Image (spheres, rainbow, N blue to C red):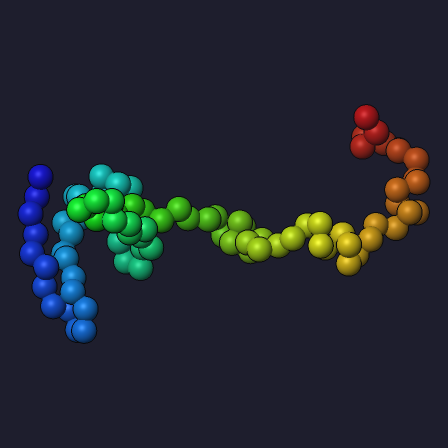
Length: 88
């Protein structure tokens, strides 16, 4: 167990965390790393925030059902016979 001090940091309070402690929870590069903080009893729990891949970030909030409501698939495509390798 390591101890640290709470220090004034601008208008807030801060705690400095050693890099080896952060690495234990999967934070290798702490610059701008988002974290989740919660209080349980008299403990403050710090966790690495779940991260989305860049592809997942691009689709974050995308509603597939709403997309198909606004852009219905042409019946011409639905009724076309299967051809080639896509036929099951």
